[in-house]
Amino acid sequence: MQSTKPRLRYDSLWHLTALGVLTNESMPNTWLPQDVKKPARVAMIDTSVAMDHPNLRGAINHKLAFDLFSTRLGAFPGLVGQDCLGDLGFGDAKGVVAGLPGCQAVLEELTARLQPDQPPCIGTIQPATSPVFSGHGTAIAGLIGARPVVVPLAEAYRDAPGDTTLALPYCGVDPTCEIIPISTNFDTDPAQLILAFLYAECVKADVIVLPRGIPDPFRMQPELYSLDFGGRSLGELTAPCPVSDEERALWAELAELIVKISLRRPVVCAAGNENEDYGIYPANLASDDNGVISVGAVNAKGWACSYSPPSGLTVWAPSSDAESFVDTDVRLDMALYREDMRGIPAQNNNALFSQFDIISTDVPGQGGYAASPYDGPEPEDGLREFGSFFCRFGGTSAASAIIGGLMALGRSLERVPTGADGVEAKAWLLGICITPEPSQPNVRIPCLDGIGAFPADTSE
Image (cartoon, rainbow, N blue to C red):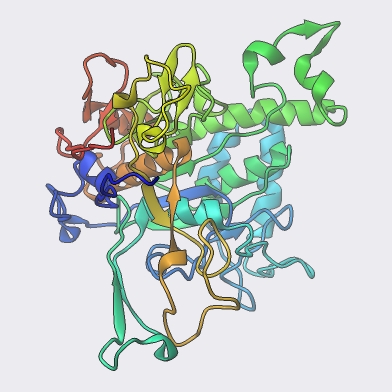
């Protein structure tokens, strides 16, 4: 028997209202687009992005998008067949590699790679930007800086003669910012991440967003990997192959590099989805004296999500929730079990659980998280359907993207003072935080207007 409870309805941009970025009428709150003098530049280190998504076309810098997935020194997916780039500020980058010989060598290689006489792609290697790889990055980019757009409908799929366009009123936290995707894979290769951070430094990003962990074999779980097993750490013993002295040194330098770059510009990191104390690496590098920002997740009721690290984080931000069934936290979605309560413990705290999801941009067509019902590529003359263009998204990845967008908006509006370094930008973020639940005093949620407005979540 199906439940007769009415289906929950809610604004898909509720997280922007909670942050004080939009009003309940989905209008900008305490700011207007014309207040932006210079759009902020966000370097996004993640998977590739569907750069032709209608809501992202105006946000993505196609020329500077950089792919490190396909080849060691990178390829330019937006510059195939064109001249490459000139000087991007290598002199500035030299300052962050001082005292880091491995990073200095990598920067020299990157500098040579980015000279004007170099090809966009090296040899026959093409950028690895297939829709198969781009789901996560596309969702992250949308949360940061998607723009509302009106798009033409493909002629063959118009329901009536007058139906020539369709509004896609979705937007990110800062719909005026510029996003530079720096796509990577998940190999245990410190040089790749060093290249990614150095490139973010070379393009002079205002904010760096890293919505993922880094598989450093010595820092993923410090409390385990620091143990000594006969002169070797657990990281070395469990590594798929021996870790060379050179690679060990590069992993150590990468951690130093991230902190040094964060002193110049904020580095926003996802804190992880497994309740890790102080978050995953490199979010757990965050401290009062650097610009690393570790981000946890709260649901639409303002409660820390069941999977979010419980302590030691910089800030929390809205995300999709998840059920929990452990001895210290039983949070089950009663909408799923209303017709059959067998096995549901009496201490289930359904009042803390929220059904509200985060909605973001997705790879159009068959790729991404939400597949199209149609076979074949999207038509060239317009939109065929919009269901596959958006998806449910969550975790601290979504939360970190939202904070990255908020940091960009602070820069764009000059709420973060011009010339502020990473530590000062982080201080601004902490200065606009609220604590919506007195029983969670450590859960700080930034709000642009200092108030915020979580939706009336009646999902229990």
